[in-house]
Every structure is written in structure tokens, then in C-alpha cells.
Image (cartoon, rainbow, N blue to C red):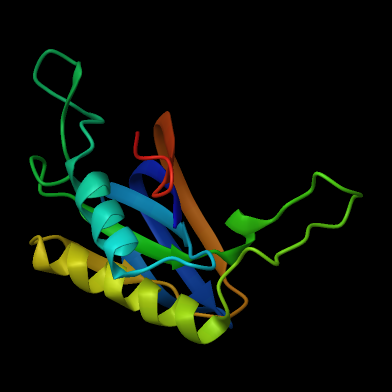
Amino acid sequence: MRGCVQRVSRAKVEVDSQIVGEIGMGLAVLLGVGKGDTEADAKYLAEKITQLRIFADDEGKMNRSLVDVSGQLLAISQFTLYGDVRKGRRPSFIQAADPDMGNRLYEYFVQQVRELGIAVATGQFQADMQVELVNEGPVTIILDSEKTI
């Protein structure tokens, strides 16, 4: 499972010109589910992302987590994080999970984050979404549950 985590002052997702998810200060997370991913991968990323120390403390150092700053999280499904462009110019998505598994693990990730006490907004699975955000810093971190060591 892969996550592209961005520290934001605000973020929102629209589908058909309607806002379906919106947050203030926190993290916008593009989340991709790969073949072979399990609930353990989703739980690992939920815990890792919410505990990343990427928010400034009183001295301006990145020492606070999403939990510490009472931030919010916007989770957006993003199968294209599994796009492979090593051959040719058109991405191959054969390493992305099928939609049923992808949606199940995306929803499980959201549930795990909520159980950690974080307010979560979401995009709409398999929809054509427009994402708007203000990346603070900018701070962007890429995580992959396969690369835990």
C-alpha cells in the first residue's frame, strides 16, 4: 500500500462540482492499494501517517504529529500510485489491486485513522475527482508498506 502524504492548511475534493470531502489544517493523503496488500498494510500506514512528526513545534522544528496538533486527514483513493512507466510511455497498472479489494482496504484505512481519534474526510472511490489543496512547507512524504525496513 502506498501513500503520498502532504501537509496542508486546507484541502477539498469535488465530484461533479459538489464538495464530497473537505478539511482544514492536517494531511491530504493519496492512497494506493496494490495486489497482495492486506489489512495489516492499511493499519501500518494509518498508524505511521498519523504519527509522522511533520508539524512544527513552538521552536519551528518538525516535532509534532497529526495527533499532537489535532489535525484532520483527507483520504483520497489513488490507484495511479501503482502506475509503472519503466517500459514505454503509457503507465501499466497491473500491480494495483482490483477495485473491490482496493475499496475494501481504502475503507479499512479510513476506519483505522478514525479509530485513532482523527477527523477524516474522504474522496469518492472510482470517481473522477478534482482535488484542491494548499501544501504547507511544502511537505510531501511518500510511504510504502512494503518498505518498512
